[in-house]
Image: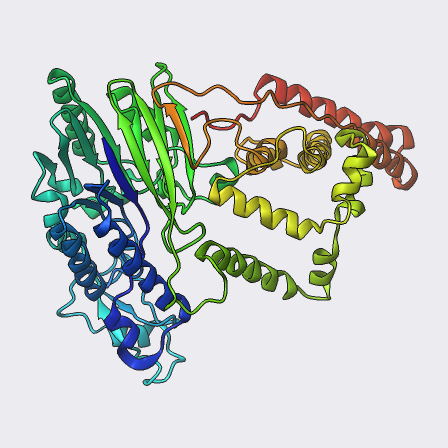
Length: 537
């Protein structure tokens, strides 16, 4: 079966854009992209089913939800089946109103401290004044809109899945539909009707939801049907670098992945990260779950997915479709992707330029040739390879790798000069970290080494993230056998520190010079006994 998967549409209503006359070009563009993508989907004759995995709106205001549901209803009238999830941008447990503009007047009340979602009786402006006493009365009166609750969403979008469902778990706002007689889809929401359960049990689903999922999977097996799922938050992190900045509530933990794999799910479509990604996890029992993450249509990279699923063979063919620019979109770049890349890089550059004491200029001026002497012995570039990359700015390299990581376009195989340089540089960093007894940085990196974090940003060694055909119920084989990069930089640093300690310490020079090496050996021995290992997915 062929179907479309979209995620993170972050829709902003036309009324929001026009009220008050204050809106950013980014908001206007987001609105226009949504209109264009769904208009194109209506016209496609090869796609009858559309799955949307959450963050339908940007701020969760009721106006945007109602207008977005009208768009989906129009798509539905063209003969398409539309099934949606809602997610964290679509509702707010912590407030009943939201400011339309980006002003510091959001009142974040905690649900256990104040009544939640009493829209009729809450004096929002008074709460703003209470929270921000320094603001004038006028500043406390921005254009505000009522925000949807989970119950509102369950009702607003009932025509897009709930009404077609053959089973639902109302307490978790989740449902199951039959895309075909023998192909079922679970639309799993991680919102609980019981708010205390949401905060206590996060990051996970409620016990009732787990029981319901298990029941659907058993029913499917008994009837010879295949069942897969859609969630908003990915169950497997796209790359280690993403997990470092994540929060536990985003459900990127092995427990949920392993539990659903052991229940019997082997394929999940998700969103949230705005990444194009295909990742795998396996439980202690050896059950494999494949997590396909779909990017946002209105952020980098602006795209959606077409999936051809063969449940009998457990085969999936993926195609990534870029969102297209129209003449009405007021951007100078030829494509939306080029626009979002430029916007992302420009934003990061401004942050660095704002660093004090001209440090930003120094950072932006660093080139490969300035750092290569540090990792020459580890990278082992030939003169020709070094000549290809020596003038590249490190900032440009990092921006390219970050963009490629989000877009799933890692292209630097182990035989390329940039791969060798970056992995050689990481080997130096890992060596220094590994020999310093006072730096527990490997714990702060979730057990990953620098090499393990950077390597997937250079090249995806498994299933391609965009256009690929693969078997999803088993772990993929690596396309390349990655080389090992080693460095003795840590030992050199330790020698220098030991000599400095011997010269500067008021204690015995011999004792001072031996202290650091002995502590390093003890640390290495401890790590061998109980190494800090990354979570296994």
